[in-house]
Length: 28
Image (cartoon, rainbow, N blue to C red):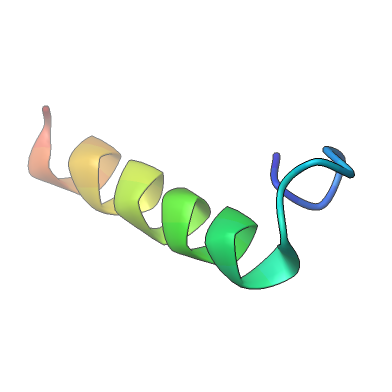
């Protein structure tokens, strides 16, 4: 997601992806 969006820095995109994956893993 973040990597495909030039407005979002790579580190931020990675963080958001990690948070999204965590939420999915938690069932939230």
